[in-house]
Image (cartoon, rainbow, N blue to C red; front, side, top):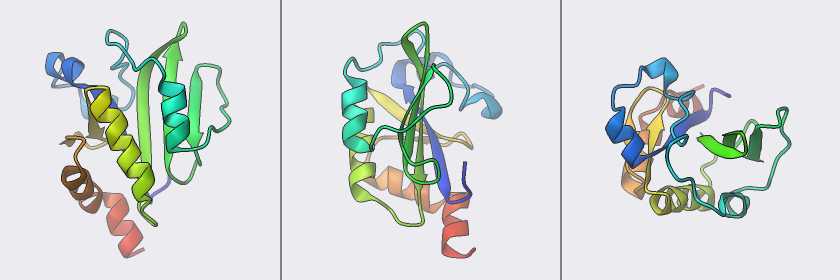
Length: 142
């Protein structure tokens, strides 16, 4: 992850309610979707957010650029188990952000920033999460 990216786990609301105290280092690595229903047509929906990318692992699908706006979906035995989004705060892309928030709302999910901040998929909350991040501080004063 680049210093100008804010990383979020996309977490189903129900899963977070049952495991609200996951240790911070494990927030990004937890298989939040393993017992929840991931949106069926997610590949098409994510392709509308960012172009499909190449992956170094069979269980990883990516959309977007490694050092820019990006979405990763990890799978196990063909079932999506984890979703991570990275937002490039050097040049905010309102389309990417709006479609990511829409995906989270439809999936009944929240965004959990790497430091554990839980963010509702609303423009104001998302913007505040970006502006209070380390990446934002770096991008505005490198």
